[in-house]
Length: 265
Image 1 (cartoon, rainbow, N blue to C red):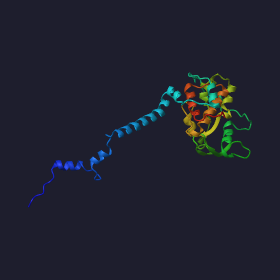
Image 2: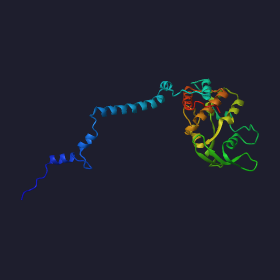
Image 3: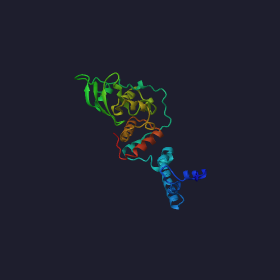
Image 4: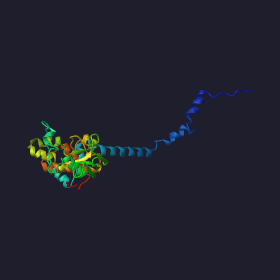
């Protein structure tokens, strides 16, 4: 009887190299990804150039203020932008001596209704408001369409629930202090600390995340509200003669570039 020969190791190896998982040859795969054609190489170079160009166009204005100015990143027009241009720029803000209590927040009752400004803001900004008792101005519950996050928050007064909705100073008290309020008398600081135009009912965690940050370091996650937010800051800083830093001014311009007709509130 004749014995069948086993394929040599070289032949077995060649056989494995020539077939893939689905029975397709590697030679076929190499032909599929062949980039030896001048046309294919040209197409690859074009795609690479587009990707690099888009990345540079998006990233460079964020990295370089000069590039941002040239590309129009900080180009803004309209009433809010015009008011911003009139604010004094001070890149050496001084927060020494700051104390929140110097602004007398919730220590006045300007409308004489028997409630402090927190309840007045809740009553203004919430819907479906209920009060603690008949004839009371103390807000017990309500619904907030939060401008900072775009979420709907159901407020219920209580030891563990009230903080879900907090009252934010749009121009933060510490920011105001280092922007000029340190030179005010007590009466003006109290007026600022309880100014309804500078107060908003907002999501508690968002308010905590903002802290005392200016627009250079914090903006609402709700992009649809950013133009209104920045315009309100500009209005308050204009009315009280407060300054901005260069970074703050650029951040505001970048926001207002998307809403050229933005009015002051």
